[in-house]
Length: 123
Image 1: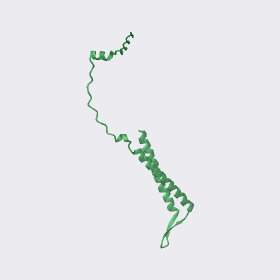
Image 2: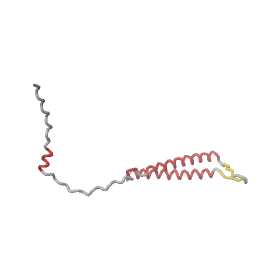
Image 3: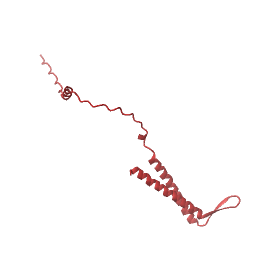
Image 4: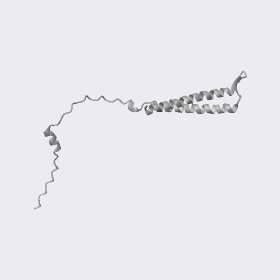
């Protein structure tokens, strides 16, 4: 298995666990409170305020990491710029040719540079 696919699978599992956590914390909040109406507005009454606040903090935590993990997964899934670069098609292969014996010998014979001529003696 490729490391990228394994990493994506782990990230998806992490995001699924955070989604389940959001659901659990939201249900815990609704179980610790109830809404009433006095005719003009709705009021939130608490059955167990510490449990409600604990579930609220858990929901905020889960939502924060769910958004951050989703954005990080999106960053991993986006292709890099080399995926968008179009390369020119390669030319058809050409048969290899052997160089001629004389041409090969001429290429191997390297002549040393000529020494400068001595200057004439002053008279």
